View 1 (cartoon, rainbow, N blue to C red):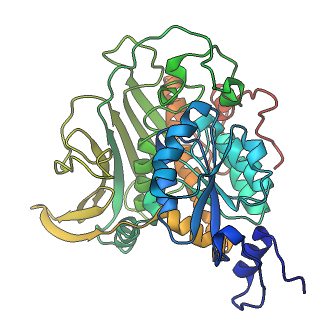
View 2 (view 1 turned 180 degrees about the vertical axis):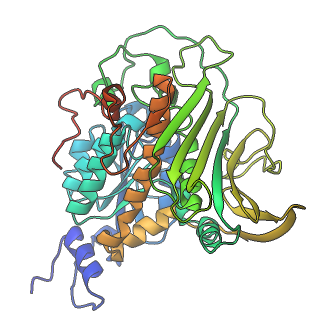
View 3 (view 1 turned 120 degrees about the vertical axis):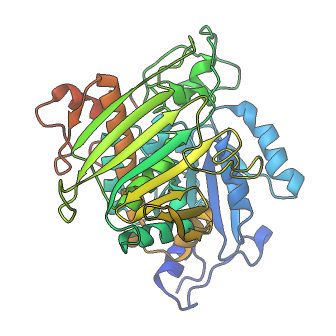
Length: 453
């Protein structure tokens, strides 16, 4: 038997057998690291640093490489997250294709802008890397279908970024509802009420030094460089983002769908707009979307309704408490934001935020059962790399895709300004080629999401 295995062979071996018969010669710099998982984080501005910190705190997990098209970020990010904490400085890449050639990397955490999520994930999967990809996992429905196909074809673990699915809070919520705790749950509502100031207006300008802008554009159309199409503000541009329903809102969309126990809708309508600010934002800061699902086991009209609402300014609390003013979840539930879910059933209703759910029963709305608990989405991914069964684990990305499909369907209805009918079996809009054209996009070569993965 060959007693010297590369890291990928070792990790695959440990996933396949519980016996310790396979030996591996560890890196001399990391003695005893034969169970160590080496992660690369792709996209290190904003949430990327949260991924870096979260993986770095896990036992036997090393953030071994960083990749970003903006070289200006590397120095401060490495100092803040590695050298100041006496951790070994990671390798750096500007082109993820070069990163995928690195044999020492076991898995990648994709934290790019939305328009890169699917292509970055598929290329990584094809390169044999395990993948966790931020929400939304796709920029359109075609991409999500291809990503799910790739996750089923290749023997690597693929995780969707809907991190609340890893929380005991969400899991007990879903079980309580499916067990009939609220009776017939006929409607769910997702809330994304976050204060969003104007992004203003900026003129196009030369590409800043150190920014690999062609790589940043990737699959999107070629456009001049503009600050409002770059760091973070890309969220509000249809070429790269999906608005707040596809940003913060996709978490609550996922939970609404999870608790309601539905997959894909048959009818969609949406109305809203970009109010108050004359700026460069294209996406709405107020949006009300509704989705209708069949419910053959329900009473009367045999259907369920999912409502989703984005508000970007002054609002009420919708039954939620004031929230926290600081800490890791402040951006989700704070003195400024109201983010969460409501569920309505024949016996009562439920409120749910990221860590807790509460029920109020009967006509008097008396306090009922509750649940809570936060998990560690990053640890779930690292453990899956060590011992997970991709065939089972990769249901995560399929579920994530269905939730992402809702945000895309809602945005299509909003952008077309009319109600839509959808066929969940064919994943098409019957007799509506204008809407069907928005299920995908034109890709800029060579950054093309492949039809055959």
